[in-house]
Image (cartoon, rainbow over all chains, first blue to last red; front, side, top):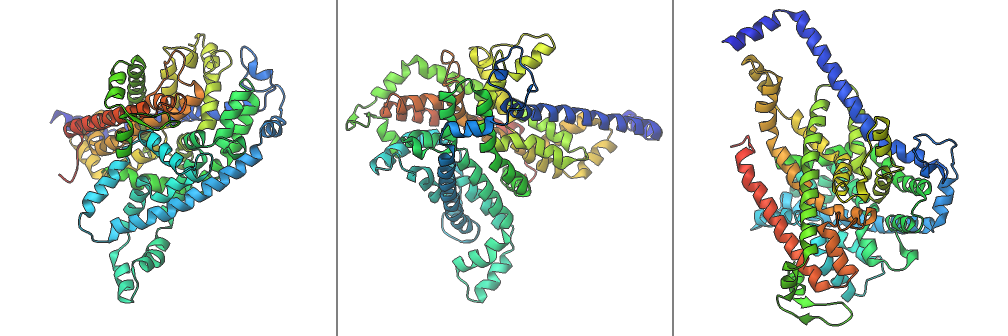
Length: 293
Length: 263
């Protein structure tokens, strides 16, 4: 009773609660602004470092802002190693992997969402369980497999696994397919459509947000992939951007300015994609995250 | 997985054909001090980054859920680092964490604190990696935010009528309602923390003095630097067992604190 009384007397004085609310809001904004600064600072540091002189990055104490803007770090860093070639290689591998992911994940996702088969729940659980196995557990057997197939120092090991499904994407797509009303495919079935036809003409056109999410996640995952190129690629002309950056760091360890310049260039496609497809990102990540509920 | 198990019973350098050595790899493993070091580092980094990441993201998500203006802007700010995280940002952090020329020690110096050696220091290298991983954990904020927006406002109204203050509303409504989402992020965060070895490979290559030798990195080193495929496969199997044990323990603990509405 006492607590109820206290609440009533508080609502009895609307001015006070108004001030309290305003203070609370101000507090929230102060915290968010502080967080924003902390999260953004590394990017700013990356940008300012990329514009410093070679001596400027090794000044003690360091300076946040460069004394002069050395834009030439960008072309000079980019041409210090054959980065144009690395870019083409990365585009090739990433495209092949993304296409593979899209094809190999929509089909099982449709099966898990729509087809009735004995043992489907068990198969679905088994597929989800593979999400818990980190890649390094299968690193060694996969390497031996590709060695036996004589695919070391080719692009095959970099994109071929994407053509064999990926549990996380299958799960994401399946969650989305489940939200599409079954009446739609039943109507199509009466009109004589088979499963592939239903998937292609009904489900996929309605799943654009989920497809977009998988596309951007797959693109970024492959763009940033370092371990597979590191293990499988031997000749430098086959390197991807990620491996090229590692090579750059190995050869020009203290050239932080050029290193940051090249890093920024390799991040640009991802940042652009992120701003274009931000909705798809949020949607995709929410869809899988809520699977935990 | 089966192939991995079979290889773990062999002595294989890929140059010669494999010899069956039975349990020798596992016997060697029990006596290998580096194995224990890498296991300890992995658990230290995993627990540290997951706990700190889960708490930080949860608090940020709660702030973002306060009907703030410019939600899209803030969400972008907190989310972007996790999107671009990769070798480019790993190199950036090597730079930021540099003891003499790095951003963090520069800022600490401004307020009169002599910063530690970070990646160059045995004691501070893992905390430095944890710091970097929290910066890149923004994707969980998006998941929390969606979860928070799914909590019916009637629950808060009922709690307020019963006289609950903000702390009790947070502790008795928000946390129980969010517990499945927190649990999901704990599990996925732990699995993601095991992948960090790829970046560590570039940043410190396990140093100084194996202080950042994560388990994945040790597998990589045995397999692709020393070409002990059999031993690396045995390590992979141990890792798999550890993961299953940790996830199993989390599920077991979850029965005590995770609340499912449908039950």
